[in-house]
Structure formats: structure tokens, C-alpha cells
Length: 236
Image 1: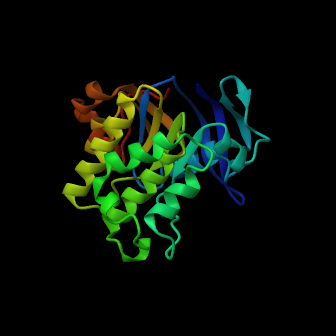
Image 2 (image 1 turned 90 degrees about the vertical axis):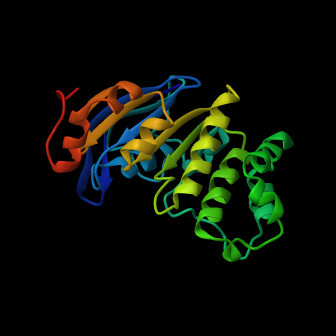
């Protein structure tokens, strides 16, 4: 479904990604792990089209996205949950989901409320009145309401209380259970990232240095060395 080939990108004159290659199959859940500054968020933004491709390719079902703007990628079925949530403070929960789901079947909005019943009770509330955890739920629910084929999530557990993190994890499991959505998630939290995905890539300094089955990596003590400044495995 998504095929990244030797991708390079960055900001200004600063190269952040240095030849990243990975793939996400239809219905697969994939995590991108790495320490702060490894290039994880840059990778998602380049996939979604808010950063340019400097070299290599981003292929969606075999088609190059190099010249496809971000809004078109959204129409093609790619939804992005950014790390800053990007919500509109004065709009209500309902307005966020209705706007996002205006071109999708109504059952996706119903599913979003079903996954996050807390939002059902606050659907008329402006998002500025919600807690940080509830705002993160709105950000994820808005993406669900679009009825995407692939969901990109940037640090969805960042700064959340343990109970809210568990709700987000359960939501990702529920979305995967629909059988119609692939998930690509960027995480700095090793445990969260490996718990909610099937396959994992580890980034360091803009390169993939390790990859494998998420549950196998969860038992690999070498993974922690990434966060201590070392490397694990061989560069792939």
C-alpha cells in the first residue's frame, strides 16, 4: 500500500532523512521508533506532503506522490494526526468530526463516538474547554471520521496520563479490528509503540538501523541502546 524508497528530506538546507526505505501493507500496523531528533516526525510530514521529497520516492499503491499536494493525499485516503493536534479552539467536537467526515460515510463518525464515548457527552463543547487528553481523542476521532485507508499518527501518547494512553491504545486496536485501515505510528515511547503495532522500524540520525516483528523487538534488550546513544543490529 505505502512504499518508501531511499527517501531524503529535511528543513531549509538541513537534511534530516538520509535514505529511508520502508513499507506498510494493506491492514498492517507499523511503528517508527527512535530518540528525539531521529527524523520520525519529518518522515510522517514528508509522507503526508507537508514537507517536500528531496530524493527517493513515496509510492501509494504504486503511484508516486512526489507532485501530489497534502489535501489530495487526504482525499486518497491518508489521514494525519499531528503531534500538535491542530484543532480549532472555538469549534465544537461535533463540528470537528462533521467537517472531517463530510465526504465519508456517516458510520465512520458513529465509530469515532463509539470508540471515544467521552466525546459523545461533550460533542457540543468547544475543544478549548476539553482536557489535553480529551483534545487528543478529538484529534484521533477526527481522523477516524474521514474513513481513511491509512492513518498516520505522530507521537499520540505524548504527555498523556496513563489512563488516556490506554484509551488511545485501545482505539488503535479497535480501528485495526475493522480490517479496512492501515496504521503508521511514530513514537518515542518504546513500550507504547511496540504494544499497538505488528512491525517496527527504528530510526537513528535519519536512517533505518533496525527493523523486525514488534513483539520480537519488545523482547530485545539491544533496543534500549538506541536511547543511550548507541546502535542496534546492522544498518538495513
